[in-house]
Each structure stands twice: as structure tokens, then as C-alpha cells.
Amino acid sequence: MKIALTIHGFPPEHTGGTEQAVHSLAQELVRRGHRVLVLAGSDRWQNGYRIERGPDPTGRFEVVRFHRGDPHYGHWHKRHSAAVSRDVEALLARERPDVLHVHHWLRLTDDLVRIGARLGIPTVTTLHDFGATCPIVHRVRQDTRTFCSAMPAAEPCSACATRHYLPVPWIGEDVAAQRYRDWLAASIAELRASTVLTCLSRCQGERIATALGLEEAPHSIAPTLHDPPPRRAPRPLGSKLVLGAWGSIHELKGTDVLVAAVGHACAAGAAVELHIAGQSADPPFEARVREAAAGLPVHWHGRFEQLAGHPVADVDAFVSGTRAHETWGLVADEALALGVPVILPAAGAFLERFAGVRSALLYESGDAEDLGRLLVRLLRDGALRERFFAPVDPRSAPAPAAVAEAYERLYDTALARGPVAVSPPAPDTERAVAEFHAAWDAAFRVHYGIGSDGVEGERAP
Image (cartoon, rainbow, N blue to C red):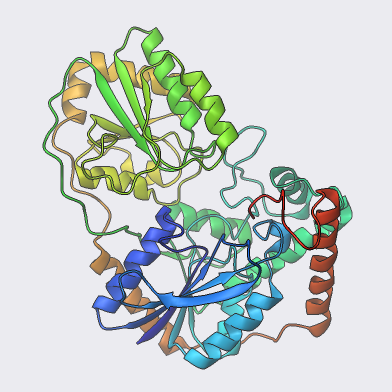
């Protein structure tokens, strides 16, 4: 079977959990005898719009990277790209995959599923986050920093999304509201055009179905990053609790919650040490957190290539501060695979997956004081300590082969059902979007003082 996978970024350029999970799937599908073609977005925008095609570093399949050149194409106003849509359609028409498997639209364009359907290609769509229901993707409110349960609508969503991203004062409220309506209509149209719709966890599927009025929740298939790394030797427990946290350093990931929790625990007389590793996704935020960590037993390790043998993984427990309503939690699987127990916020898929699991402890999401109290208890409650630090429960995530096998069954289902009938895009709609983008780009350059012949001063999209 020939399978085309679309994803917003792909290794080695992007190495987040979703990107690695799709990379793992691609490798496993090839091992199982399928032909794979990956269509990926990119952040390498500096040289303008272009398409780059070459082998994956493993040499097992090809990757086509679409480098958009329009300014800030990650902005929700810019979700659609006529150029990417045109070139994806031409590529799929030439390659004729048996199945198109859409994992994300970001950095590409918002009509990937409908392009496949118009070409007669059955489509499987996997929702890795809440981006189909909210331009902010993770649905975390800026004011409360908690998960947003508002139903998608121009009011209040367009104003919230406008505040969240790069300031665009040249866009009025009425125009922003209409852009949101168009964004939501495209999102719903993509899901309804999918032959098979999947997500990662039951709680994610139920929330998406409720938000978008779907007849039933998407079928859930757990992701996986890769085969488990070598398990570390058991670490003898001392009088000090050593914690590790890895992943992006960002407010959404709650690095500040972890540092504050260590501060609370130390103030209560507990001997706690925190090791942090990962790439900064927000340098000003990292600077503020580092300042807050001054004088605390917090150690920063920067970017890392692998966890096995890394100091951040040679710890008593992994701890996550994420504010996101996680849809699965690949990072927890990494820790458990290494033999490291996990301390997680009680929200989203973490609550669904780990409530009652011996090797997992849950605390109130976003509450640094509650996490601090839990760390103190771990040091002082012998029964809790003995139970939590017993040999780690087997990892609950499936192996790559099991994930690929589950998708193979869905690919067969998609082939049996065939593509969903969709209408071609209206020429006047395409023209209006093109005119909006041209005006947006021109106003952006004027407002931020960027010449039309250069991008000096422009932030990466």
C-alpha cells in the first residue's frame, strides 16, 4: 500500500512528540512493506516559498517539505495557503497514494483532506491536539491559564485568538470575527470530509465531538515515539528527592510551576533537586523562570539528543508542569520506558491514563503549592514513598508495531469506504482569501517596518 502522511514538521527540523510519533509510524509502515511519502511543513521561511524533496535520514522513505514564505504563516489568519494547496494537489495527483493520512494542517494549508477527497483518495485524519476546535491549538486561556471549555463561536473566540498571537491592529473586530467563522467552517469541513477520523484518547475525542457537534467521538489510537530505550539500573533512594523534567521550556509546559513547587518544598524543609533539559520555546519566559530559580537547587541542561544516560533522566522521578489538557502524554511514556516513575497534573489524558497507577502521582494542574506539598509527602510518608518507588509498572503505550497495525486496519476501512464526496472550492472564495492575504502581508510589513524586499527584524513564523 502507498501511504502519504502530512505533518506540520518533521525530524530532524522538528523533534516534538507529535513529529516523532509520525516519524515512528512512517518507519514502522515501511518495515511492514508499505511505501511511504511524508508531506511536511517547515519553519525555514527565510528564502521564500519553495518545495524541498529528499530522503528521510533513515533512507527508507521520501520527505517533501513545504517552506512557506509569507510572513507569520503560523498565525491562524494564515491557515490557508493557495500555493501549498495547489502544489499538494499536483503532488498527490502524480503520486496517487492509496490513502492520505493527515496528522496536521499547521504550516501547510487548511484543506488537505478535501484535496485528497477531490482526487478520489480515501483519507484517515488523526487529531493530535485540540487545534481543530481552537486557533490556539491547546485551548489554554491566557487570563486563567486553564483549559477553555467555551463552545467554538466568533464571540468570544475571535477576540481571544487575536489577543493570543502577534498583534495585528490593522485587522478590525468585524474582520477578525469573519476570519474566525471561515477558520471554523474549514476545520469542520475537513473533519466531515475524512473517511476515517481518529484521535489519541477518549477524553480528547469526547471534547472534540462536543465542541464541533460531531455525531460520534473519533476512534482513539494511542501514539508511540519509538521502541523503548534501555531501562536504567534501579536508582537507590537517598534523603534527597531528585526530579527530572524534559521537553520544551515554555509557559504552556509549566516550567515556572515546577520551579515554584521546588521553592515551596524547600521552604518546608524538604531536600528537593530539579534538573531541566530541553529547548527554549520562549526565551523571555525562560529568562524569567531562571531568575525565579536563582538560589534554588535547579539545574539547567539545555537541549538534548537522547534521554538514555542523560543526567535529566538519571533521577528519582519525572515531573511535568504542563498546563495543556494533554491528549495523550508521550513524555510520560518516555519516563516510564526508562523505568522512572512520573508526577503529573491531574488533567486531560493524564487523569484518564494514570489515576490509580502505582508509578504515577497526580497533583492539581497548575498549582505549584499542591505540587510542592506532594514532593514533601514523598520524602516524609514512608508508605507512599515505598509504593511509588517500587519497580515501575510496564509502559501503557503500545509498541510501534501495534500502532502501525491499528492504522493498517483503518487504512483498509478507508479503502473499503472510499473518499467522501466534496465540492470544489468556489473561485470567488479563493480569490477573496488571496486578496486578504496580500493585504495582510502588506499591512504587516508597514506596521512592523519591514521592507518588501527583505525580512530584517521579522520574527520567525
